[in-house]
Image 1 (tube, rainbow, N blue to C red):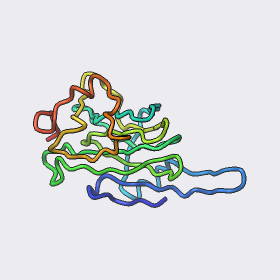
Image 2 (cartoon, rainbow, N blue to C red):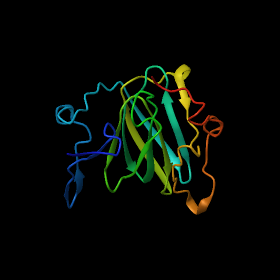
Image 3 (cartoon, rainbow, N blue to C red):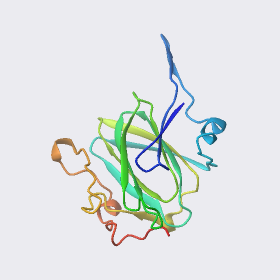
Length: 182
């Protein structure tokens, strides 16, 4: 597996070795010993599956208490995936990184605790799977404004149309007003 740091070194792009033949392919999506050698020492407690139609934007989500580390991958379709550093003590606080994850490129994104996460569906639909290091805790669930001018994330919106959002995501505060980590 190839592991590449992003502009925020704690966020990593993982590219598994894909073994292909006339029947299809095989890959290891998670192998604890190999990823531990790259600094990803995580105990996963929950797997999530999100199915969304084109134009859907989910995020930017985080849990203020019991922050979740996430290992994200797409098994069908394609998404523009974003992680925003919400650790005030970090030199990269308020910065974000992004990448395209798809069922074709098999890339995964490791997003450590302390980051908000969101994605926008580029394909007709997409199925995103992600492993979490903490259980979902609705009382601690928070959302950061996806189009906050302070973040200035260049979301690749289809034909410039507004994204499909949940009510919660549409009413999220910007970075200046959102609770963050120490």
